[in-house]
Length: 187
Image 1: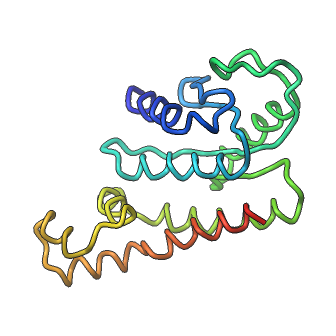
Image 2: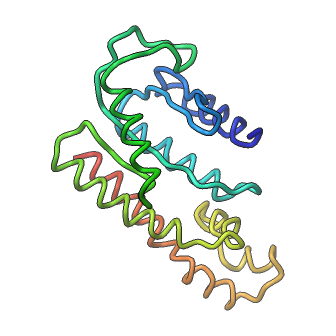
């Protein structure tokens, strides 16, 4: 839990310029917040996933990004005491995700965009979830742009083994899926 709190605090600090109501842990292992726009919300989701990928403590996250009405004034200090259909719909969708294997869902946007984003996130999730726990730190290093030769030295492996590991981790596919999602969100 301390690790989760630390990551949420880091996100709020690092992405302050696009956060309207800061990410706030609400029910122990859940958080909510109000983000400026879709692209910023996706950037935060990717940042969270990458932080968890490189983290010593690993846990899975589920995300709902929902555009919707908030009837009460937006609380700029924390994401409590706000009501509205947008927040209610997000909560309902998050609860339905718990019964499925889907970890990311976009809602409240135009149907065609929603379908494209949710499909692209399914591909992203399949790659992300395919990284075994023991390889997560290495995948993080590769996703940060580390060279396989540098990592071979760091982890005491030979260059060709590390090159094969990069291929088996599908790092290029992981990075490409993130780019694809960003391109779709920009449409």
